[in-house]
View 1 (cartoon, rainbow, N blue to C red):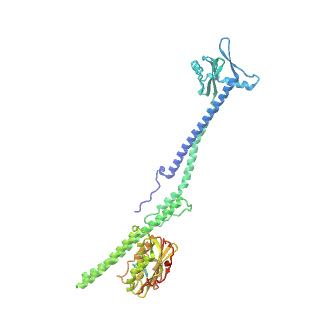
View 2: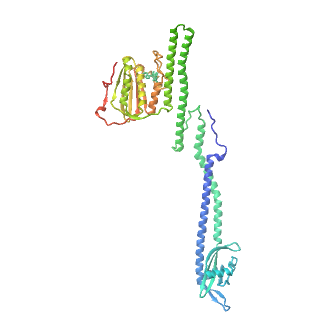
View 3: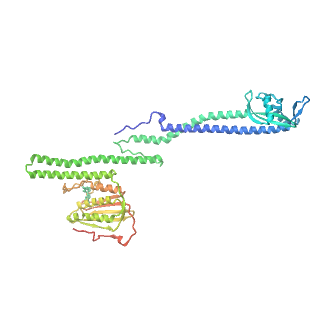
Length: 504
Ligand code: ADP
């Protein structure tokens, strides 16, 4: 029954803490990489736009500074026009001439500086077809040196002639920037991951510490030790909620365990006594009885005890069915005052026989939402006790009245009362107040009030008793679920209703 508490799993990969941190790290890595690629794509696109714009500007500048003339040999020649006195124009033209290819419509190269030569240059056929179709292009070419260039090609028309121009611009700086960014970013990712995971590891330890503490504390709880309660941390969080529920569950378990334990002890004790008596009588009869009447007497005593035994078993079954939740409450709205008067009526003959008066005092009508069968059982039990423990000439008063949202039911008698020290125990199973005058056969099973207390509890009500030895007893039950009625004249309280009052 006492299973060993399970220790922490040995493999770290099974730890909740590890799984949390690992999951967090994987998600973070994916996020960081994704972000890196997005940044890079944005940088590339911005750089491409900027370069294309720069090349467009340079293309426009070409228009202002480049002209073509036809030489004596019929070949075209490029003529660069600019203000030689202006250093800015000088440098612009020098830059433009640095990386460019100029060819005529036949694919003959007119100008090809060193800077462009190292790029993969177009063949005359390619140039001719581009001039024929008027096709322009924009793309990256890698020079022999490995330097990337953005090259824009296009056609320039001057008079009757068409010229093919390819203008290049180094992208070394841009590529370098991308390389440095990629390097820095992806060096940073593992470092960031390491840092974030370490923090995650520590934070998850802190966050899960209460769970670990809880697990440790629960190890102390076993079937034989259900007294342990886990102290609330006072944080009012989910964990405290869990602790509260857990404590409540252990308390219920403890109660159930104790009840079961008590039950077995009580039952064996209760059954042993009549069995011993039966056995004793039968043995004596067997050994000493000689006449039929002696045998009859022994059998009669045994039978009385057998009846008592089956009575106890029946009452026990009833109670354990109720307590184990097999007796479901069937609530409905009913007039509990009427029910109480009916119950009093049932006891009238018995009370009259014992010279005891029974009277109903209370509301004429009192509606209650409860299980009428169980409420009646409760009243019958209380009345039965009142009659049983009353003396001749005594009186029993029963009353029902509304008390706020509840209904108060009182059964009061002027009987022998309950000694002070016994009062706290009378609702316990098999508890009976032993009295010198007790006639064993007449004695109850000590289960009636346990049943009453179950009924009250099942309805969410309370029960109290005021009593003193020799001074009678008053049982006061409060059951929630009063159903308000519009008060009519007839609903007023009645005291000592003559019709309900009986006096033997
Ligand atoms: P029992 O079947 O013995 O009456 P109960 O559970 O009904 O068992 O009651 C437990 C004990 O409480 C009884 O033994 C009795 O001594 C005491 N008791 C209950 N009701 C009254 C009462 N109205 N007056 C005096 N004693 C009472």
